Amino acid sequence: MTSSSADPGSLRPGGRTARVRAAVLQAAGDALAEGGLAGLDLADVARRAEVGRTTVYRRWGTPANLVADLLADMAEQSLPRTETGTLLGDLRANARLVQRTLADPRQGALFKAVIAAATCDDQAAAALRRFYDTRVTEWEPCARQAVERGELPAGTDTREVVRAVSAPLYYRLLTTGEPLDEAAAERAAVAAAAAARAGAFVSEAPEAP
Image 1 (spheres, rainbow, N blue to C red):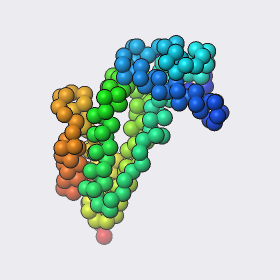
Image 2: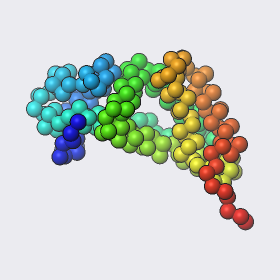
Image 3: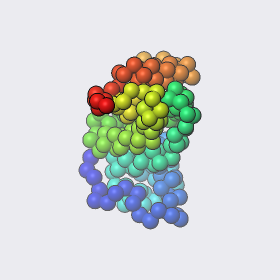
């Protein structure tokens, strides 16, 4: 799919523009959850959002642009990091947030659709990488602070610790179909914390004293 010359949704951020963007992104998410990228039609999104088709075509231009803006909005709207004062507590909070999101019928279907789109559309793939980079950046300080407290060894790749929490939950969503329940979230958090403490994510040797 070709890209439009302007960034999607990049007109003035307030007032009617903000309301239109919110309505269009909600409609786009609904359509993606129902039919995937192949079923994402800008005219249908305009109808669902009750806005003019010209507005949608002018502002986003292509379904891929719309997906990119939707993922940017999802990253912005995601809940902030929880600080509990311990590595395991923080990773539990992260795991439960991911679990609740993926277990939600609409959100789970939406993530399946976006991930599927990313396998065959470069723009969707780039947007998905930006989404996850934003979310990992939000939660990475929980592992960095654990290193500073002495809970984790020096040289730990703190971003990998965060990725290790959500990986088994996405595996359930996309591959096994096993329940995405609180028990799964607990196992993911405990396993990631144990592996991190054991040095599984050390990417460089600590400097000699």
